[in-house]
Image (cartoon, helix red, strand yellow):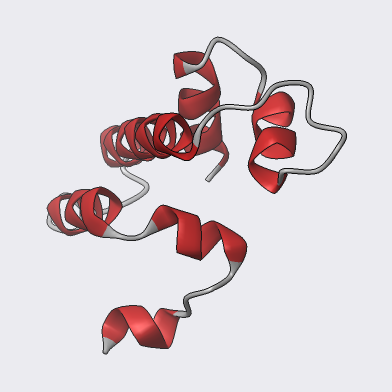
Length: 91
């Protein structure tokens, strides 16, 4: 997960901490990006994270395409805000 946040923060030219504060939407957030920009950055970061985990051998090669598909189609905003559970995802 940290790899994904690192990738997203890099894409937005900010720190991981600043990105997390911005996603939380609190008054401490130093910057505010629109939801689409955050979504694109998070997805890119998470895809990079899957690639790196596969390269390191942390996840098996057969699982990587499934994880990439999930990253591309899951409602990240709902996941971040806690509006969706693992049960919702698995049906």
